Image 1: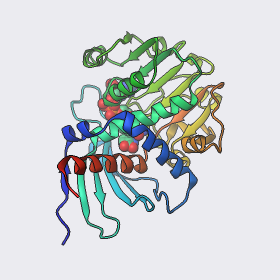
Image 2: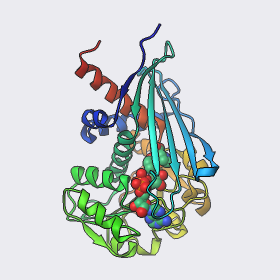
Image 3: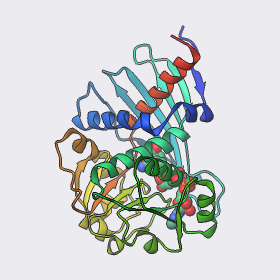
Length: 315
Ligand SMILES: NC(=O)c1ccc[n+]([C@@H]2O[C@H](COP(=O)([O-])OP(=O)(O)OC[C@H]3O[C@@H](n4cnc5c(N)ncnc54)[C@H](O)[C@@H]3O)[C@@H](O)[C@H]2O)c1
Ligand SMILES: O=C(O)[C@@H]1CCCCN1
């Protein structure tokens, strides 16, 4: 009989994971995913079960990395929350299994993993696609992902100015209080993004919050929210003018309202750029449409588990 699973919760995951260690593993995983070699990564588009009564979805994100011996799934519930709601917008748990025996090895909090790996993948997109000498970063939204994107982007890049916009004054004030570094609060999304070299959209909006006419030619946009086929964060002008990259082409075609409803073409996956099979058009306006992938959670969870074992002196 297999040993019972270990439970690794939020504070411990936080202590065991860092963007600097995660980024090379995520780059490797994105490249493997885009090679579509079933022995490297098997990852179907997530199943989303509607939670009609609560205005949300339960996403199931299984992944198998045969060569690396990693089998995992994330359960993630995400909701469209009304303004003023105190309930969380995203709740996640990652389960790591033994691919040979099929038993669960570890159950871990998925909040820190989701926050960190999503921001790290956006930072990889910026590293590959933002204009050279990018000076101004703008963040639209001030929730959990906004915080993790601020932390990872300011750790990885040197911006002269960071701007943030929230739909509420309280949201912006809370964000500014909780970060440890300079940031300029803006009273409109337009004010925040005009002239910005890199723009991150991390809102719970289902309608466009970023419009192409505001975006400087050559800027890079990492679009992280709007993960349902009828939800938007970006308008048609931006989607049609930009060169569009995605984490998963299939995911974008099935889940991204920004891609589906604008009719924009996905030029490449981030993994294609990492593999050198598609160009990084830094000289053009670029959009990275992030939907989030199970393989990102798989490598993050494996890293947490390896570190946990080393710390506990196990195996
Ligand atoms: N791509 C990925 O891998 C990935 C991973 C996690 C979360 N997400 C998505 O990113 C978004 C942010 O997630 P989070 O965990 O930071 O949520 P959160 O609830 O902590 O923050 C959401 C932010 O969006 C703002 N917002 C909500 N509705 C808005 C509207 N109509 N207009 C403007 N602003 C609005 C809120 O005020 C808040 O600042 C969500 O859409 C979530 O589903 C994507
Ligand atoms: O990949 C993820 O973890 C997220 C969760 C929230 C909805 C979008 N995708």
